[in-house]
Image 1: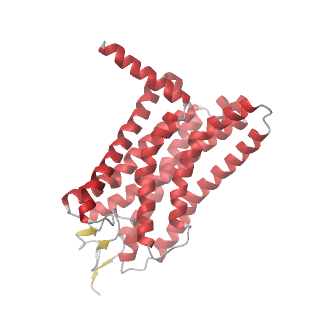
Image 2 (image 1 turned 120 degrees about the horizontal axis):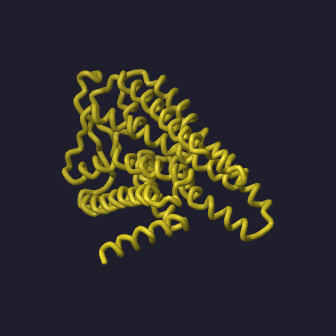
Image 3 (image 1 turned 180 degrees about the vertical axis):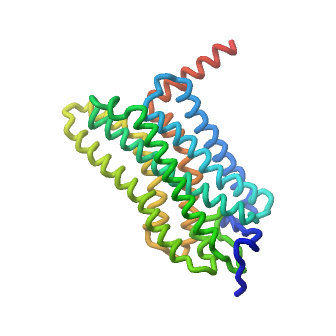
Amino acid sequence: MRRENQSSMSQFLLLGLPIRPEQQGMFFALFLGMYLTTVLGNLLIILLIRLDSRLHTPMYFFLSHLAFSDIVFSSVTVPKMLMNMHTKYKSIPYAGCISQTYFFILFADLDSFLITSMAYDRYVAVCHPLHYTIIMSQSICVTLVVGSWVIACACALLHTLLLARLSFCADHTIPHFFCDLAALLELSCSDTSLNQLVIFTAGLTAIMLPFLCIVVSYGHIGTTILQVPSTKGICKALSTCGSHLSVVTLYYGAIIGLYFLPSSNNTNIKNIIASLMYTVFTPMLNPFIYSLRNKDMKVALRKLLSKKTYSFN
């Protein structure tokens, strides 16, 4: 089989979603609406946190970064998918494909670290409320966010550099709607054992370790809640963690479904559905989860709307 390296590679072909041609228009409108909802909803969260001084707390500091990450994360893949559905022009340049892989890994890992930082914040708020302001100081919050960015960038860069050194076979067809790392490795004619090893080790660092930290945090939170004598105190503690726990369930539920459930003959379809879950659905649902389940966000939204109404009058 003919070999082509990165210098001679010009483009890949993205097969996109496994839908019928007559359904393209319906799915295009659906995913366009979901993408616009994602962008506008997360921008609204950032705006509310920026404008309302009562939301200048560690939890909302992490939430604003998560909202920004979700906007970019969704923008890495969805616009290209929509363009392919609308124009039927499914090719993507080699450099564009490598760049898309880098940013996809970067913001997927960043989401994981930010969600873990938020879990730690909830652990301190419930288990050590008297020392909350001391433990969750501004310097600690900034360190957690900066550390999340640095580790996520390092993981994404490592994967991308190892991917760029590979040679690819004559078949450049990617059975996905974006340049998925696993799909690209299957197209390579080179030895990908080092790439697979890095995927395993970096996956432990970026996905499993944060997930275990979240589980441990909520284990301590659950123990603390059970020791609360009053029902009112239990409800308050649960409301404090409810929104974040919903986001954790959505994010890691899709990942567990993708990587840990038994494979079937429809493995590629399963991969695409799981990818849609954490690149399209989860970033879109996060603003609704934090706005509908959070009293402070509701108050900030009503305050903003009342100001706009008053200015128009």
